[in-house]
Amino acid sequence: MPHIRTVFTPHPVAGRTVEQLWQYVEGPDPVSGKPLMKEIVDALTKPLSAADTKTGRITPDTGPATFSDTTDGLQELYLNNGMTDFLPIIIPTAERVDAMLKGTSHSPDELVGKMAGGAYDGWTYNVRQVAINAVMAGCRPEYLPTVLAIASTGTPALMSSTNSFAYCAVINGPIRDKLNMNYGIGALGPFAQPNAAIGRAWTVLSKNLANAGIPGDTYLGSQGNNLNYNNLIIAENEQASPWTPLHVQKGFKAEENVVSLFRGLGIVPGQGARGTEAPVPKHEECFSDLFSVFTGFFGALVVADPIVAKDLKASGYDTKEKLIEWLYKNTNQSVKDYKNRDFAVGFDYPRALKSMEPYATWYKMPDDAMIPRWPHMNDINIVVAGGQTNAFFQAGSLSYTVSASIDKWA
Image 1 (tube, rainbow, N blue to C red):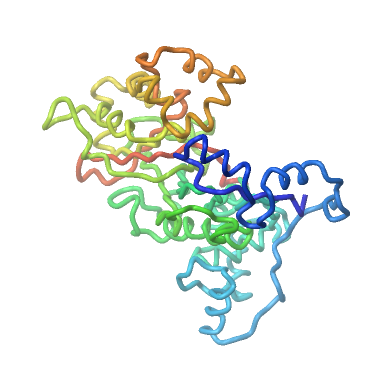
Image 2 (cartoon, rainbow, N blue to C red; image 1 turned 180 degrees about the vertical axis):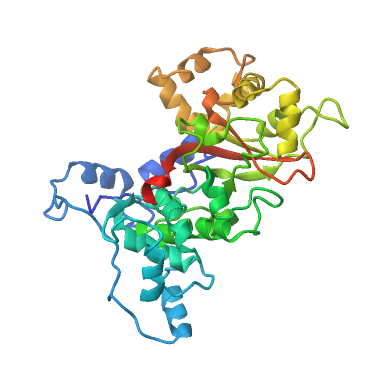
């Protein structure tokens, strides 16, 4: 539906009383000014117009095939048309785009996927269009298969939620070394071109190929998220890890090159978490302690330095799965606290009413009963990255969404 009918509801919704929410329902659409419920009913029941019944794909308007101007003029052109992250870009000249396309064996006209940044139908895009955005973000041709793999998932790096979402990509396989990605000292920092440029390309293509990131329209994050500039790109330190790498856990072979995507609210350092045996705390208890401030709406992604991972293996956690099981069973909350969380009221209670588990069971339990922080054990994921300068870790309120083959786009 290229002209999907959209109604804007008043905000904020979280933390409002029932009376305040009823005022929203009985009041006007804040954008159109029309009565909200009448607008919703009309949108659902009025006959489809000719425009509503059109089929086919929505493709981004790329304008003229070429532009001619000075370098400064072209920078302004892209900037003024909302096609950048508001930092200087690499101008995608025909020569640079042709060079970028040499990074893949796929035809420039091949469709890659469809992506939507807001409450609209997704736009479709081809290899050439992805390559143009990769050039703009500072990628080299050898990075293109990874950018194409991300683009093929249809996952935008900018989401229209009023939450200020963050996005993360974990990269596994031999390509990490082929691209000289950083997974050692400063693994999550600005210390390697592939980590930085691949992450930036994800944001830039989300704006230009998915209609994402227009404040007040396709982006509604109240405060925004600094990670959106180039996202959180993690190349797992497979060589120094005592455990199975993430992509193998997700069903791929060790020799395959894979990117796995996460979304959520962000990431925080964990060395401030409490431990039970200071000055040598138990890492798993530090993880669990940090999880206690995470919303159950998203999962948890632990990024452990290899020192932490090796300590945990020596403590008996010889697999990630054993550690995840301990964390799942020992990161608990009371039913009362759970029911009082905004996300539970808005998302889990309706599931309980539909007899969906474990929500239906949780809502029948007494207030003082203890339940897991997350509904499923696979809501927790662990990767290993870092340069072994100290036994630190970070943890993100981030849910796994999808994995994609990089090799497919080579």
